[in-house]
Length: 413
Image (cartoon, rainbow, N blue to C red; front, top):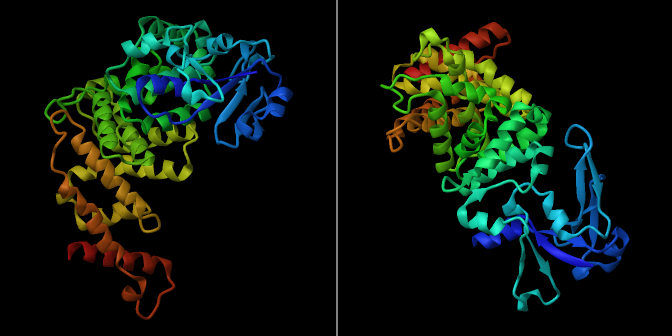
């Protein structure tokens, strides 16, 4: 039996960065022999049914080396062989990218040995050249690998490029309908991770460069042809603006919900008729059903979907706060259901900051004035039923009208 560290740990070690996790692969042993040997004195819990994978008591993932081949459609359409005769090179062959297809053997005295990298597919050279390249043609067998490719570039940054042959391969996958096999759950899992990477725009840029964006995220792709008025958006189109907004969200280290809202806030611009460009009248209204449909399709949590819809609807108000009437303020808060879910106001404020600075040349724009949205809401939220109706009230229409008027007075004050 031989034990290897594989994948991301080796890649990050060779890049000189701290690995996020450690995966092990075992060769030369059956499942029973591996469990009986208990490497490093660990105990293991089996997960997954398709092939033996274990979570060790060290918290890391362990697996028997395996070969696999595509025999059906979808994520589960694979035939897997994990016998003791499978070599580490054969196991690495099935991995997505060359930089993830490396291994180092682990010994009891590993700290005193020079780690020799098993690198049959040129991963070290691609790390040196900062190139993302598919390991083999088996890449096409799992469309999730396209999303991982884009996500890794979002992690590594703009100095990394996708190898030309990999760009061509992904483009062919898109044309042949392979990407249509992606499930909503897998897309959301990869998207949610990609949005939290240091360079989230590179996730979408990579999909655009490989002709995959229009298949996986058509709402984002449509923004590319949504031309903008240069006076307000020197960057030229709604796609570039959205990417700049996402970049601001990453810069401010905002949470996932904020980044989803930033991504979706201008989806309505993708529906603007060509004869109306570069103006986008009412896009904040037409964008709401698009943003909600996007979230529903990707199985985004329902509470996040609702708040994303609200911020899409009212993000343009953040550009005209000083001209909103007291009644408009209160109606906005009521429509956003902010009195029951006040976090949506803070979300709108964060999207407003990113939207304001997500324009070419406005990256350092003063956004302190946007804080008024929270200040006004705090004043309006302070209006209490007992103060408006000291003698009580049961008529729902009177309650609604009375509370509305009192909140409007609070804004005026």
